[in-house]
Image (cartoon, rainbow, N blue to C red; front, side, top):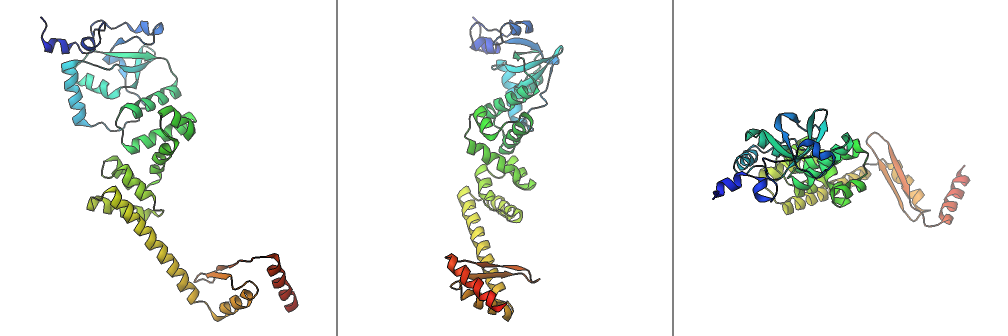
Length: 300
């Protein structure tokens, strides 16, 4: 009787009846049966240049390598044929672990696709099955839009996500680089990033990000901080406007008073220190404007 270790050692064949790691279909079988699991020599496979994942967790990769040594490859990778060799569409992490485990062949599905199709398949497969960080997901979405001419709506359909979700990921790429790195490295979460995005100024965004990391703020606390920052900025702006109005020369006050008589004092004025500015007049009827014009014409 075969031992439990022997059964597990067969990998896919031990778990799926009729499939044995020593009897995968030859690569030629994929031409007539795209669902066929073929055995591909590891040295004939190259990495995917469109791989959306840029960082692989070394510890997790080591664990997968050991699992493959014990159990074999459970889930085949997907490749496309390039001349006499093959290029990975999805499953690069499994491929790396298989090489590290010393496997000479690896089970794979072989599909025919062009570069755009390959990019779409690689990104969609990775987003759905791998734990990409938020920045990697955002960059993947951006590549789909730029290189495959997809809209946010069509992209959302392909990856099975709401359009609003896609839009939120893409907004991350508008954040300062330091914040994107913090997201990528797991120092702040997607929720923290949304709170930071509520601020428009990069300096404010960076300051809030720094505080979140230093004080280990929760998402809720970060949202409250962002609201306080916005409220304070709004108060400062209003105070600055009041200060600016308070420093107007007497001639400006006189003009506001004269013009205001015709418009119920619904006249506001902004002026910079350099003497540039604007006058805003709110009127409630054509009659108010006509009355004002008559007064000006009489002066002329």
